[in-house]
Image 1: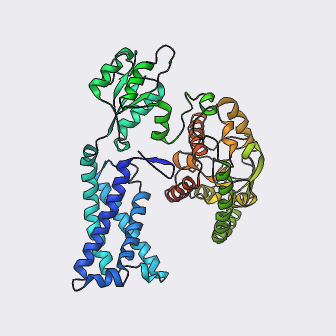
Image 2: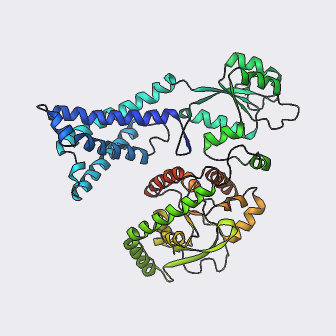
Length: 461
């Protein structure tokens, strides 16, 4: 795992991204050498060809990312892969057309070079992806992990590693007095930990015993640690693997006495407030025509005001008024009271359905950022009625209010809308991860990823 933007990213995915950037660049460079046989250096150096090609390659890599082709390196369908690469190349042509319309000539490739380089890319990129997915996981040998215990957290991690080989971690099995997870992965009782290590030769041991009292082999673990084997708690592995903090077995003492900074850093919170307001000012100016059109559309499509106001809980439990474009019929909760939205919610208007899908209903929240009630990035602001109930039912839910809520956030881009208590717990785990790692780099990553979520119409309900 490599940590970039305070996010754990598999090394195999980073290697794939870098290799594809080089490969695509080579395709356009090779096309330039054939199309300009007399002196291609004139185009590459004197006419800024290097920068022009780099612009196209960057757009292609972003388009590949937007198609979720870096979420997994497994190729499940070759036909679908070729179709997706075709769409990606089409997006690059569209961006080149937009640059031509904007008269950004320094960034535009000649038409012949764009066609030739794109043709080579459509052949080379899928072929490389198929080759990489098949052979490189074997070449880049995964780190062998032995699990001590069979708790629920261990079970989730083992299942995830089996489904996602790109994480770079491979389970060799578990050691526990109970073989309930299956004989195929059981390596023996705790008393045989040393023998299991000798047979499997793991590079990492993850400790996740459901009950540690009089069961944790302290001396054996100490000897193994001094022998060079990395040993860590299951909660640490869970955090780096899933990108969220597990609340199943989290104890308050682990947070109170944490050796690493857990709460939000005051300097980073102040910096976040500054750039959130700056971004909100710019976004409000740029989105003003869109907001005007949406307001007219909402007003004309159904009875009631265009702007919807609702009480939400902000930082430190303070109540503030949230602004959104109305996506439901007026007085939708007059008889039912406060209830969570659900798929196919009859309270949502036809226009509101599309506004939610495209996230346009959330544009007025920019005014909440300008007022200081919210940030651009942060946990989703919830209604007081739900907060009161969830605080009583879910441990650590109150702690998510130690930072300002946001228009977008780590939980919003990683998980669907939480319409149940179970889903709310998962989103809380993402929120706690964000609070622990709050930084401008993570905010930048979330804002970039939000664009993909909006374009793919994910998470809305």
